[in-house]
Image (cartoon, rainbow, N blue to C red):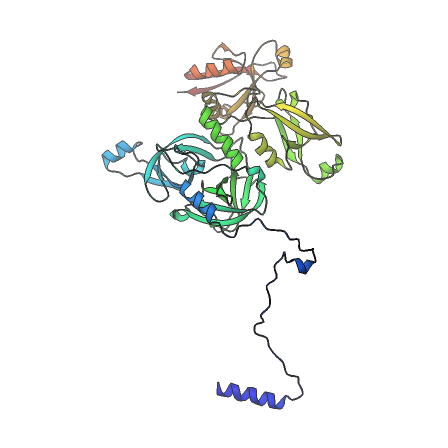
Length: 470
């Protein structure tokens, strides 16, 4: 210190030609906010941000309604046998869940519970109870559970369509098995498709946020600052395996529809337009003289589909569903997925540079405007194919009834027979098949060896495909 002081003293004595320099360490100045009227000369008018000063209200409402879920695998198939042999179930996965009704309905992610045969629910770090599975939907990665209880705290659904990019949100869950952890962030984007679901009819139109989400948050709540549910936290994009700023939630409007279907029908009732779609790119926009890239291009219209019945054509650009704009394929899938077969929707589209409107009655996977039974949907899923009734033109051309195979799921039972799409089934074990209803009734009753007889367009030969059922 002495040598430093001497050095400074000598420097100032020798450097007489330089002006004195004053270093301002701290200056007291009035704080001026972004909406300070005098700074912008706005006649004392100012705007107010909608951001809250804290998140206490939303957190207080959401945390009691978010539970911890442990998916257990019993070693001998049932808890009774495990207890008899003194073997405790092993945990195969864990995550979070959201209570959505006072009588014990809980929504979570399908991937949280799919590996377990016993589900243990912890209510906000307190009591634990066992839950049963009411229904699952792999296409949206959602599942509905139920516990026997009453007067439980629960979350109300918000309208996720009204959620805005930049809006504050809270993620509530149980990361790293910690109880009721709340993190805050904003909505970074909407209608994100990250290709994580491998179901044939998967819907990915996620809400993207930068609220911290880590392992254990899956199935937890994404809520607005009022504490209302706008999404179910489902996935993150990461290189490290931990949170890096990109988390994704299933929108609450889609969650509500899936839950209502499962409660009412035991399975999800999906409405279909019957089209192949793609995003509008520069080439399409230039060839069709579109003013922007917003909208969804129809690259195929399936025969006898809801879209064909309504007069849509290849090359049309869908721009909105029931007044909700659709800028890309995930948004279109999300909007259509909110409706059931038989529901009417208003579709705005562009054809030859002109705007037009049509009303469409959605159909089910079998091209009928009716809901399907849970047993039929499960059977089609187990066999791994979809079918539809023949239309009037096909019926006249073929001289009788039958059922057309529209798609075949890879690695399914039907796929193993080497059957190809567009096969027309006319018989099952010598039973004449007139329509989808007859097909499903026959498949529900047959046992052992099943032989599907039919033909392909343009080929005279009769083809046979067989498999076994238990």
